[in-house]
Length: 391
Image (cartoon, rainbow, N blue to C red; front, side):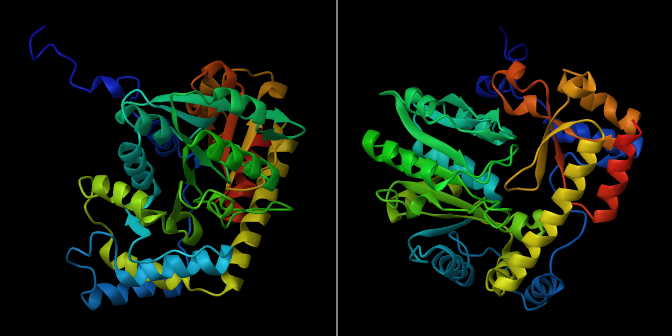
């Protein structure tokens, strides 16, 4: 085979094409449909935080390269947030790293901590960047599937234990969980912590929806559990909490050796990013508790509008305990193929959704499930619900 005949894409990424989010967003534009597929809000976050970014730009703060680990003000704000909310103490200088959103944090952590051939156990369905990052690191992903039970998706701890072998290097967790909306309980997290300590595993936890938990659910950082402080990389993000997803400001908190490892990779990915926005996010993290409660309450109201509308339209609805996504089962509608359903939905109903099968290694296991985002204005959600009822 000549160089011109050789496939151009690295073989580790051969299974990954254009993301479903790009495909469905293009369909939304082409058809004028309401886009409840990709998870971004249709309104900006707090005006005072947007103005903080403007002030930083005008003052010349961050317009040139900021420090590689992130500006000191933001690293301090992240550490103070973790202490205030969860009682977790992190040194801003050695245990906090600012990243280009959570997606870079996930990629850098996996590239840093996983050797070729290592097994990474992840909760399926999982956000598509997890699979791609594991592949780039040369690891082998081992899914443990969350399954529907009593109106929610639940983790089978026995299945998780059985998935861990002598080749397992790392557990990759996401709670609150996208796309299912599951929030891992204290009992589940205790069992996971015990397993990680017993088998000497590293854990990467994606906690970007930490402030979006509903009803009786509670977000509990795994790093706060016995034995986990020194083996857990916790990932957070400003985008989901403050509704500025385009700013791409995320972070890692972990013990110094873990942060050093992640930073060693991160410096060769983006090096630095989001300079002026880092100053604004530092102010956002210091907002009073009333902001976070109002944000949660607003999203809860939107969840209920969409969930009730989807139920009225005939879907089986798994009401999420966290995130801003609702997973549905389309089989009560006489459908069974989520890909076909979602590709036809913009023309049929003027609404865009995402087939959950893209988040599964076993596409058949996810075939009947479809995800809708409710991080939109209430009037948009009501209109979408009405269109779906008329479908």
